[in-house]
Image (cartoon, helix red, strand yellow):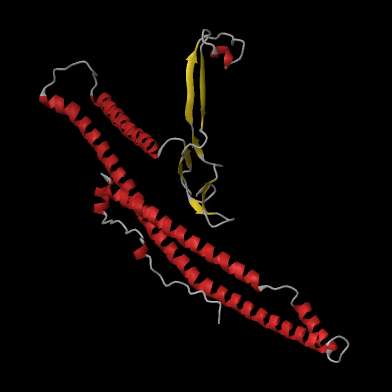
Length: 320
């Protein structure tokens, strides 16, 4: 479960209702003011949008670990966090819309370059259609070169952008793998120390309990008012004063919490690696990005399976 903090995000809502009406429609005054606006054309347009309850959302943002529990969250406020989007539309629709917009701007750029070149070269626009071959190539050859140059620059820019994007994604895969090693190193260094502390506390309190039991037995055997009772009482008072509460149980509870949180951290790091490696492999297989990846010699990283994730387990033994 990923916690999403929507503050600072770009929210794309769904349109539930959109209609243009005239006074003949009941909602003209039902959803709008009772009086007409001065100089009105007596047409009103109503739009209602929002996010449906329990509707699936598509979220793009930078994930980080929560401060309260071992779990991921997506929130704004990170340096170089990039885009933070919360959309009520599916991933396919968002990607398709962005792709369509990109191609639209490309076609618009080709049209504007060609139109500008046409008016610059052709001093008599749309005036004649009978041109000799030299005049034809002089008129339209330069236009074709300019459009071809624009297309070449756009292609180079696109290749540059895709290659940089794939390189960043590949580095994120490597970073995800390093996060697994960091968590495994943390488990290897932290858990044995906690086990030693918990075992030491347990052994210390066992000695205290045995001493208390022996002193109580001696007190019962001596009886009240007999010699030696004062010494036993003094020893009992010292133990009660220095050890008013048992602390081994808290040490064991802390050890249990650290064991659970450590395994959760390892699982989060492993899941993040598999997700980012799958995304990277998918992009390497898609056309035309696969051609750029082949030129850069990029290859997919293997996913972590159970058989490929064997590490030396931390042996937790508290008994002597």
